[in-house]
Image (cartoon, rainbow, N blue to C red; front, side):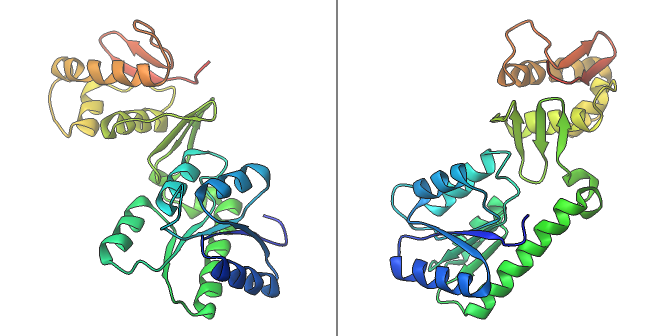
Amino acid sequence: MGSVASILIVDDQLTLRDNVKQLLEETGYRALTASDGVEALAVLQSQPVDLILADIAMPRMNGYQLYERARENPEWVKIPFIFLTARMLDSDIRYGKQLGVDDYLVKPFQLEDLLATIEGRLRRAQQLAGHPESSQPPEQRVLTVGRLTIDPAQHRVWLNGQPVHLSAKEFTLLEYLAQRAGKLVSPRELIQVTHELDTNDKEAGILLRPLVRSLRRKLGYRAGEMGCIETVRGLGYQLIAPE
């Protein structure tokens, strides 16, 4: 992150957008604006952004949809994202937190609270960028195996920079293999993780095969191809770097 942080303000209310922009610029930030999620994506594609402030209820693409799109791109997944909204229902706040959004400020808000939240999130992002290994627990660190990237915290997967959409069990299987990339893992060990089932290797292998086939297809491999998930007959599976 450079010496002057760039903050993207996404809100369809012109007055609020301009007021927040003025406040941030007076505080020393570089402020960018967009009236909805579609405009925000264009900004993200054209210039670096260090933090996103977004309303929820907007035309064309709302805040939730923008958050999902931002988290699908490996270049944007670590940008702190704060919802700035008039929605005060507990269910809305819970939903935003379930998505994994970094913070949630309800309008009307105190400007001091907004600035404190921004400063805290930017500081946290800098710490993670400077010390990624020590700042995150092992199970939450982004995993990279060749051109395959896995973000456990966001439950996101990318291959060659493109998002791969997996079921919960498929993600669990891939993440576990990625944490042990290049090492052989027995079917019994894998089935304990994916199905929470303790059984023998034969039964575990039978249960795992359709899950492995489905995962391979979603990673772009044709029927009969092992791809980056190698089968060692009678012993188990191992993940290798995709070619």
